[in-house]
Length: 145
Length: 92
Image (cartoon, each protein chain N blue to C red):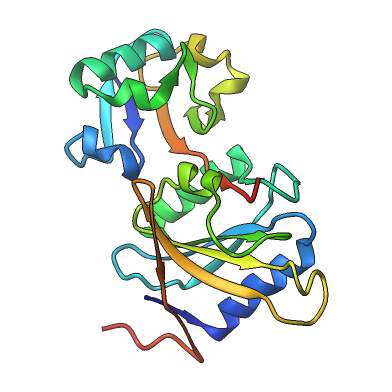
């Protein structure tokens, strides 16, 4: 299950709507081993495409160095589909390289850049196996143990 | 010659869980062969048809090796190599 706070959820949806019809992408980092998506990081889609996303390679290196220095990991990796459902494509599955991450997909096919409903779904993708999981949106993440 | 190579989570099965290993080589190509000798299976995850895989990024001292000559990129003692899988996908 993915537990995410409302502000982060809203930020992901807002990014997806803003970049529609191109795919939006980013991560939510959290302290390693906690499964807590705490730090929202919007990334530039270097592909600038309605059907593909890729983090810019230099941005990617900076992001991972930053997470390493903070002892964080990518808890959520999100991107949008802008004309199809919020389900991992074959490309998404083939390129999923973070077995510990929650892969969040947002579909903006209905709302586009406007107010209106989006699909927001989360998956584990491990060795080509996709498992959908429940998403729980909370006002704030519970206090850390 | 010792070059530190940072290994991403998904490839740590080849390094016994180590985040970083040391290897030798005057070029990226030679370095990857040396890595393979000590961590069999790693090379195939980095190289396909004689070239770096499209969705694997390798950096030497923070520079993407695609701007440094790819597999021919030169290495010197003390360089740091980072391997990161691309974060990519899409509806296509």
